[in-house]
Length: 118
Length: 110
Image 1 (spheres, chains in turn green, cyan):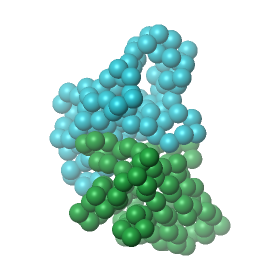
Image 2 (cartoon, helix red, strand yellow):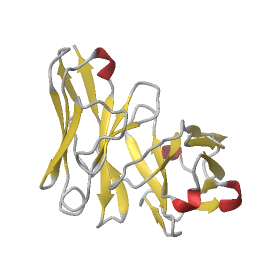
Image 3 (cartoon, each protein chain N blue to C red):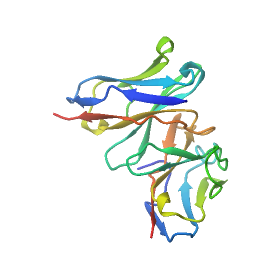
Image 4 (tube, rainbow over the protein chains, first blue to last red):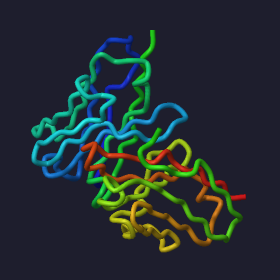
């Protein structure tokens, strides 16, 4: 079964750092595009970052310079390293496979909640 | 403010047809394929339509998609109460070099 499972969320102080994990099963992350999407409480979907199969990375302006996406092929896992966290980064962070403007995002993980608060 | 514009809500009666609009620009919808997602309360989004009008396996033909110029449309026929959800459009924006979503439309089946 093709599946993505996120972990690593939690409560973090403003200015702190956190690393989220997106573990894949049923497919190889290095052969696919993996994207992080977040959803603030009661709000809509926000695209965050993309790691292409070839290794190119892209970021939303709101996180550029603060977040880094990368993968560990040996663990078949994609990570989102987040630093200089702000209260408006509070959201459920989900990862998804695919290209938004081609085959679409499928599947999605269930998400992990990040709360940035003092 | 989302790059793609969707109405906040739509409503219709069971059995009826409803459409969701998604408006963008030449750097996103006008240049790229659009995908649509259904998010039921408390669950992860689910892919409904990709490449403007294609349905993944398992998605019933009650769901359809189309694109014209810088706008895209999702349609649902034979509305069911189980269709009550938030619906999002998404695509790539070549000017931003980033993915973009609409703000989402909440469907109420009266």
